[in-house]
Amino acid sequence: MGELHLDIVADRLAREFNIECNLGRPQVNYREGIIGKTTYREIYKKQFGGKGKYAELEFELSGEPFDNVGLNFENLVGKAVSKDIISATEKGFRSAMQNGVIAGYTVLNAHVRLLDVVTHPVDSDALSFEIAASIAFKEACKNLKIVLLEPIMRLEIISPIEYIGEITSDITRRRGEILNIEGEDVYQVIRAEAPLAELFGYVTILRSLSSGRASVNMEFKRYAVCPDAIAEEVIFKTKGIKVNL
Image (cartoon, rainbow, N blue to C red; front, side, top):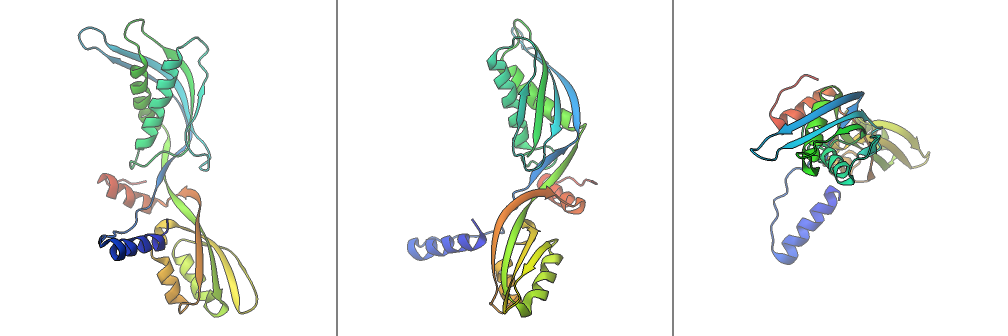
């Protein structure tokens, strides 16, 4: 939902149900992305008196294109391994992706090729491999470049021609890119892309720029790599850690 939709819902709650809402600043739904490829082997071994925990696995981890959302998991183990162990291993990777690596945001684009699995006749079970995969994912990511990804929005703005220059300049200041401008008469259509982080409150700003005569339609387009300075700021806010990217 857009900001305007949320404002309408909050207003209805107040008018119809006498429920007052405290609306904070909207949060950007960042993601994390993998760049590069690495091969990693994990040996997970725990002993608790009697039966212990043991899991050993080797895998290749790489990044998919940023528009390939989720985990692409391939089981390439060339020997018989129980389906429970393979499923638990995949679950461990997915769990680690959900928790992120650098800022706690979901990893968007992991490709895991499971190459080898070694089990212990007594100590290996599905849970051991789930834990091992979760640990191994984070460790393998240390050998790769992990980037912060931000949502990019597609904008279509209809405005009287006399406000086009000021509107396009404002989009550029918001790290946006003008794709094209169409129309030759009284009104023109601006098509552009800009980061969501720069667009909170944009409907109100556009009204101000155009004396209330321009309108905008906004929809999610894709994820893109954040500039380093912005990524450092986001990581500091979420983790309390200063990093130099």
